[in-house]
Amino acid sequence: MSVNLRFHLLKVGHCSHPECVTQRGGRFSATPFPALVGLIVHPQRGPMLFDTGYSDAFFAATKPFPERFYRWVTPVSLPSDESLVRQLARHGYAPGDIKHLFVSHLHADHIAGLSDYANARFFALRAEVDAMRRRSRIGALRRGFLPALLPANFESRLSFVEDFPRVRLADSMKPFSEGFDLLGDGSLIGVPLPGHTAGQMGVLFRAADGRDVFLVADACWSLDAVRRDRPPTWIASQLFADKRAYLDTFYAVRQLLATRSDLLIVPSHCESTWRRVSDETR
Ligand SMILES: [Zn+2]
Image (tube, rainbow, N blue to C red):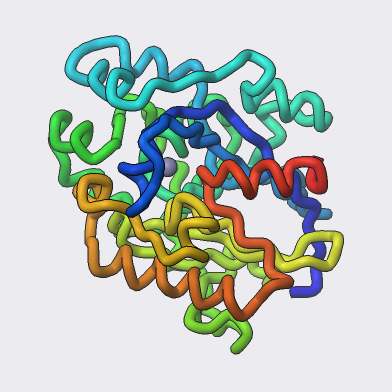
């Protein structure tokens, strides 16, 4: 990976959950779950996004029933200064500048802003899109999907990650062993993280400060829970596509966390990672 990418971690809204639902042995009090987004700037390809977090479209999509239940179960807050479009403007970018949008998975809190980026190509694993196509409106909602958030031309703007060259990861990334070279220059690798959904994907790249960064989406919800070996509870795991695969992925992150103190691992909803990293990647 010789191309260095500039990396900014952005918080685009948050929701609240009792911690005791999301990790075994957690507290009863509601804890904030930020929706984190990666802004990755490539020297030739320009600004790219890993997920979008929440957006106004989320509130529109959860107005009718039965989608309104989603908002009741997970109260969401999106202060206007956290809107992704506004934050991009602060970095000097218009929505139309985004040509690459890497979709970790199709849960509403990761894709609510897709329609704001009319010039973007979407990159997602085929397994994720196939699973979505098979669901009814209610079936989708029960799994945290809101199909109304997908732009009408989503499929024609989609590139399947599996169609990109398969690459072996460095031994230091074990137990993760392979990924897909999404830009053709080795600078950004899509890494399958199955279990949470059928085809969840993380991305791995070297940032301009020389640090390797691994955005792991919902492979785990907090690094502290991974360190303390506290996987999600039975209730939370009912949402997962494949509980066994989820745990394999969770423990793979745990092993990596123990062996690579130099690697910046970023789960999408980890409040402590946000607090630690937000200033360094402003
Ligand atoms: Zn999520």
